[in-house]
Amino acid sequence: MSAYLSIENVGITFKTDKGSFCALDDVRLRIEKGEFISVIGHSGCGKSTLLNIVAGLLQATEGGVLLEGREVDSPGPDRAVVFQNHSLLPWLSVYDNVRMAVDKVLSKTKTKAERHDWTMHNLSLVRMDQAKDKKPGEISGGMKQRVGIARALAMEPKVLLLDEPFGALDALTRAHLQDSLMEIHHRLGNTVIMITHDVDESVLLSDRIVMMNNGPAATIGQILKIDLERPRRRVDLAADPHYNLLRAEVLRFLHGHAPASHAA
Ligand SMILES: Nc1ncnc2c1ncn2[C@@H]1O[C@H](COP(=O)(O)OP(=O)(O)OP(=O)(O)O)[C@@H](O)[C@H]1O
Image (cartoon, rainbow, N blue to C red):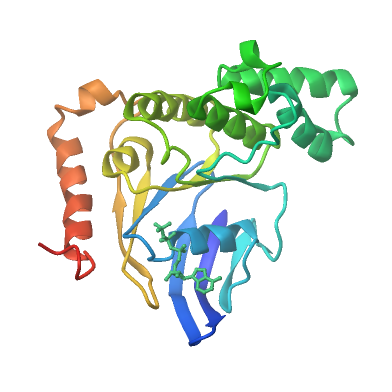
């Protein structure tokens, strides 16, 4: 049976000044519609490379990616990406940053008034409707990430690709945004692939955690199913023995795959 999103035997070799470098080898993953997948692994193991292949920003040299049975070979609005360093246009307001994406993707299917309402709806999903007239320079890092997420959601992507979306934020803002993302995922049932370095974040948010071996020729080392009931509340989970068991499993994997310089 074919999966909603299928990463089929993906490998990629980069040409560098020192010769060719195989970053990923034989990565296989089948993702169901509505699944929340986290990808975790040590720095340089190929997480962003994998996400960029799914986004269509990089071309695999082996295998490929299928979304609803169709091969992904270029970027498209069906796969929206949110990067760690919010990529808002500084000269546009919060509203216009989202509206521009809405106009680009939905101008044929929604009227002008509907596109306005849709822009406002997505800004309110991330609680940024009140700040709609501000410029990116006038809002905090966490607020910029919210707008980036609103912009991605507003494109109604089939798959939301998040590359360490909260990596640059302080712990409190990060926790707020994780809660917002969980709530949005619960309400909309998006299919999500999120790269993270944060073990707690991966266990809290995911249906499955994909743990990557170190490169070169990195591949998936282990996949952990997170069978914790939803909705999940971080305060309850902190004392939940099963949560702590899952968390320990991820930590064990990462410790067992620590690069030589990190192994104490
Ligand atoms: N365009 C490129 N040319 C050559 N090598 C590359 C290229 N892009 C990535 N690499 C190499 O591929 C490997 C994987 O890089 P990637 O950025 O995907 O890792 P990552 O797991 O996302 O790292 P981090 O967690 O630090 O962001 C690294 O060794 C990197 O140096």
